[in-house]
Length: 178
Image (cartoon, rainbow, N blue to C red; front, side, top):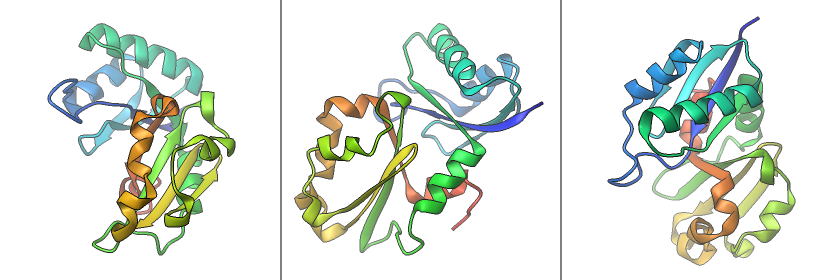
């Protein structure tokens, strides 16, 4: 039986290197036997259905991506239900606008723990950061963004085991258009 999944590919299209067309990602997932494959924005979000389990999809996807693109791309596979649960945990008033910035760090299984927050080099007095199974999500007033040190997570060892999307993307992937 087919199940709905979302693949979150990490670290593509953020600079001049590691450029990947969404059309190519779609084709690669189709060659893996996935159906109803579509992509959302240029940051590597693939919605699809598969009969495989998430672990098998991840292994096959990462191998196929490296073979077809020539470089390794960590790929996180979440079920539709997992994405919905993560999106539902985000307070409705958290937005990305001129006043606030809200993001979701989807966690690879290697670091999927509430303890991950404690290891990040952030200043909690300037940021509301929370954990739910599969993700860490945060909201910060834009005026306190630099004070929060949230941008320092990029250089932290744990960052390689997460892939960040803004709340608008997280909500869209869960089917919540707002």
